[in-house]
Amino acid sequence: MPVPNSQSTQKLPLRGNFCVDPNFQFLKMVNLLNLDRQGLASFFAELGDKPFRATQVMQWIHQQGVLDFDAMTNLSKALRQRLKEITCVSLPQVQTIQASSDGTRKWLLQVDSGNSIEMVFIPEDDRGTLCVSSQVGCALDCRFCATAQQGFNRNLTVAEIIGQLWLAEHTLRTEGYRVDKCSQAISNVVMMGMGEPLTNFNNVVKAMNIMMDDFAYGLSWRRITLSTVGIVPALARLREQCPVNIAVSLHAPTDALRDQLVPINKKYPLPELLAACHAYAKGKPSRHITFEYVMLKDINDSPTHARCLAKLLQDIPAKVNLIPFNPFPYTHYQRATPEAIDSFRDILMQARLVTVTRKTRGDDIEAACGQLAGKVHDRTHRQNHVNVKESYT
Ligand code: SAH
Image (cartoon, rainbow, N blue to C red; front, top):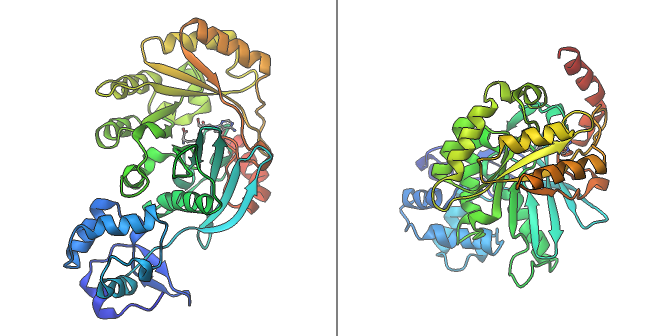
């Protein structure tokens, strides 16, 4: 990346989109991956160019996977030169890729000198699902989650969120991977990786807008699911601004138990959360809410818990996803037995709740729900970290 000419950068407002040049000097350049179509249109307007450049550049970068400005042949030479001077397309750096025996793949991606995140690709016969991270670490401290053990570091930028989809889509496409009769490799996105997406609201919504943009990845809202612990005020904003499918991490049928497992419940207790879910489900098109429920042995897996959950959800258009607990180093939780999970499911089904037990994928590479931990060497400190936390609770 050439050093920008200082005059040209000064004409543009500073946007806080850093790029690194090959000599590792920080340059104030606009990372085009941070801009959705509206953002790109304003950017080109500021440059004195036509707003339709936004769709052209979006197609090159996101649809075609082209990052070299010289190859963007429908842009004038002068514009290409200008883009080279003042912009960049900066992706997270791939550190490692692990493949599971079941075809699941996990990428460790470096997002800055001290931070890494993970993303996971889960292939199935009729779909290719990418599990995307929204933060480095997580602030929510759910007791059974590996990401929570590493604490919260920072929100991911739009570029770092959409960059995950870019990397997976274009890597897999280059390998010849396609979803059934489709030109794309990724057909579904779940915002279920590291972090709580609704506490990084603006960046997550912008990134999901790019996922749904016909000039980028063209995914329907039906193919995007945002998993949240249930940040009540943000659910209303999401319904208004970007109503994708939601999955709510419930994990307990009573406030007393949820307060322990998912501490944010003390701030947004079940009656408020369920009212917000009702509101989210209403409107056109109406939608089902998925409720996630991690099955923890002797904690939340009894028939009484199941009956209580069925009662709690009886008035909501709900689907229930039972997630067998996925262990990680130093946790004291255990997975509920298959028998307990089956009878829990049967009780919910008898109460006419559509209930599915989530298939655990990629557990041999620690890519299953709740196992994503980012930087590998964090593990060496986890024992201390867990002990310190537990001693205060
Ligand atoms: N912050 C979001 C995304 C988290 S990960 C949320 O809370 O929804 C996606 C799902 O995996 C959540 O339902 C989360 O509670 C669940 N999960 C976390 N740790 C897990 C573990 N060890 N085993 C199984 N599921 C887990």
